[in-house]
Length: 75
Image 1 (tube, one colour):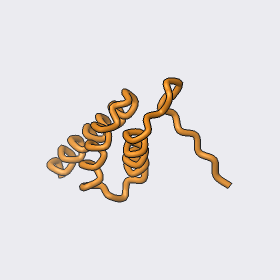
Image 2 (cartoon, helix red, strand yellow):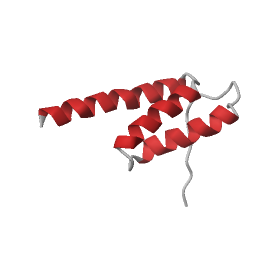
Image 3 (cartoon, helix red, strand yellow):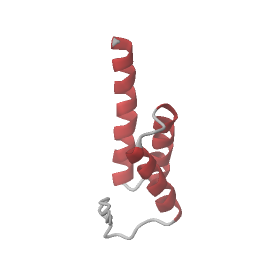
Image 4 (spheres, helix red, strand yellow):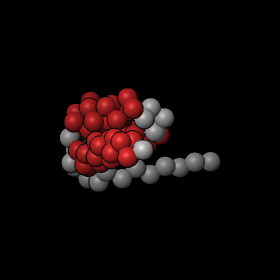
């Protein structure tokens, strides 16, 4: 059980590094980190979203006013 907790903490660090890189506009590194994370946690919706955004922003970076905040509207 403690081994699983330790493994989870390692992957949590990968996830947090991905978010840091995303906020720093380093979308290539963010993409790599979230891809690795999703190999072990493939159902993580937020990680999938960060990966998709990283891929999009890597191709077409957001403008200078971008503050890493996403607004979602749902009907």
